[in-house]
Amino acid sequence: MDHADNPPDPAGDPSPVVALTLGDPAGIGPEIVARTLADPGPPRLARCVAVGDAAALRRGARACGLDVRVRSIDPAGIGTEPEPGVVDILDTATVTDAEIADTMPWGRVGAPAGAAALAAIRLAVRLAEAGAVDAIATAPINKESIWAAGAGQLGHTELLGELTGAAHADTMFVVGGLKIFFTTRHASLRTALDLLTPERVDAAITAAHEALRVFGDAPDPVLAVAAVNPHGGEGGAFGDEEIEVLAPAVARARDRGLAVVGPIPADSVFHQGLRGRWAGVLSHFHDQGHIAAKTFDFDGTVSVTVGLPILRTSVDHGTAFDIAGTGVAEYASMREAVRTAARFAPAVPRLRATWPRVVDPGAVR
Image 1 (cartoon, rainbow, N blue to C red):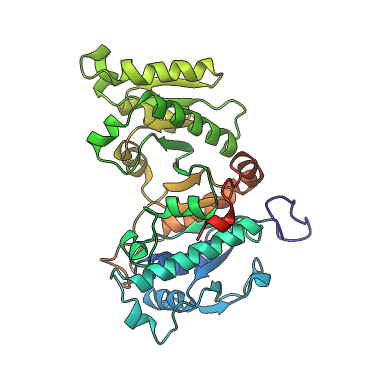
Image 2 (image 1 turned 90 degrees about the horizontal axis):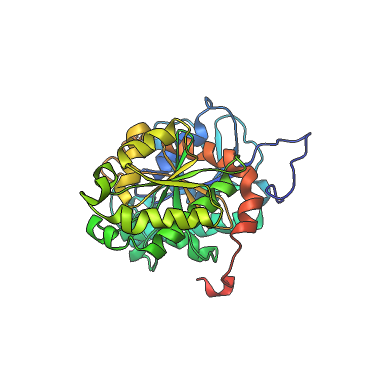
């Protein structure tokens, strides 16, 4: 069934189906997924199914003290509402209940845990591409563990880009109604400034504005470009990136017909966006956008991968190995990732048309 392209039957359940991957089974992923699936409180905006090792989800539920039964289902059962006290999972079966404590101890990097995380992601992607689910919401993975399991990608975003044959995958934060984009991400601040070239900024503005059109409601969304220097450089007194790179890039974008403003000093542009003045803000290095979003609402900041032919949302925190298995992990971010997936599910036809697969599936391992 392709929920994304075909309108739901009015007589049936119209809510979208979201697959929740468990992430690294040695981290807090199984706990926050178990809590999210077992939580009767939030509005039922989506029908959810877990993807990963049933043994890991059971262990996560036990760690949280949840009185739930984990039910393994096959793809034909996706989207059916389980009875109270039951959570559904598509079991990748990389580990059994008897083996899990020995092969994937809490809070430890290891190839078995990385292999389990990869198996869940790959299955969820196949389900989303086939239209069996409308979106995937991912729990955190550990990079060292997936590398130990043989993954060659830097992280989640790069892996998803390869699996879906995307031309380019990047990150969009959603927080408080604002969308935040990044010219650079995982680079040192010194390197990020060196990467702030006219070509890269032009591409980032174009990609961000495209994402605003795919995921937004406004017919002509406005993107604000952040400055990088104090007070926007004060006319070159505090740096010339605004004069040499950012302002010309904004002018070129406006010449192409895009609604773009800036550069605007970073100490005010995010506040203005959160008050509704801009649909999105383009930040230029990792912490510029992260600090603004997470200070405003840490648990409410959701990461959405743009550029994929599937809808993927994610928590914006790590595996928290230091507290894994203790049952104290907060699951509000996982719940918000599901809510955001449900909110953006109507955009799936647009994102499929905008970002189709460009790499032959046979080329992806």
